[in-house]
Length: 525
Image (cartoon, rainbow, N blue to C red; front, side):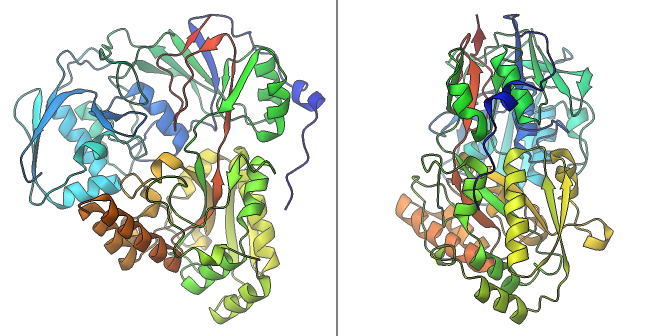
């Protein structure tokens, strides 16, 4: 499948409503990857929600550019020799946006809510004897077995993120979205001006006390140089392109590959790869609903799927931007392996896929393919999937919707006839796919797994082996077993590895390469 027709320069610069020019140096105007439909990065896992939430709420630990955990809200920690007792102390002077002091009561409530939803949190919870406050600034985990990756669990940036909230907010059911947005991070969320589908506003929290260290990803001193950050939702590529060129916005998180050549020719715009760790595209099937409750049906699709088709649809034919990835792990990182990914290699075999479908009991059931058309990545992948499934004889119902609605619908375990689903597309940041710890989508724990709810004891056993691995060689051996078992189960289908551009006006400085937009340290002249 070829890349959709390139947008012309005229289409990219016309048809855009005029916005006020983004001239105020104390205001940053930003176009995010998708609509911000919620602000809860614990109950939900959408990247756009995580990106917004990390300005408002802070973490006990953060991770730097080497993905090493560093103290953030915490002053530091102590741990016993067998890694079963972890004691943490909060920094002095931490305050919530409403002026109240941050205490360990808030921290414990926040951690308990997070542990229910996060795969690493669930592992901590499974061996937890006590999570207790020593005083207002000191708290302690007491575990009945070692957990060496505690700091990474608290500091990782993939959702569900261990974000700290006031006790009254953290007491919200972890399967329900929070309705109050008070954090302790560098920016406050302006609920009065929030218009989902149009804009979201963040305002500087004057009471925030950044750490003394230099900022590095989600760690260090988060110094904000803006009084106000305006997220402006622009799903139309031409509109966003024109707004950036005209100076009506300052930064476009993920410009579509179609318009990148045009943006690069503009002497007032910088264009660069946003995150060198890239992304792995995801074809996510619902293992609870027919026909994808049958592994043979899932393997039939795997046999026919062409990663090249998906990657060309997402980022074009420039192979500097994508590569084939018969793996669940990020290419170029220590655990990358292609063992088990053989069905994704070589020529696609539609006839064999059709035969496998028949042998697996597919009887023409309607496939509910949920496609968020307001996000270029998911729209492109959804279009390829509709074509692919038709080629192998599946009955596809293409459900065009938006990303916010998809985020709600994909959480439903209902049958298709009652509003459930069969397939949705997303992508996983390469930083989240370097190992099993932050990799929510890799979990195959059935009802407790991520949306799609794959179940495989072999996958879970191999993940447990990785957690227990004493050295890198053992971790690599576990990763091979994970990759092989995940392909056998077809937990999901990787559609390829790709990187994306980000684009910003040249009067904006401090934009860094990271798995999420880093706003601290950014300035505008």
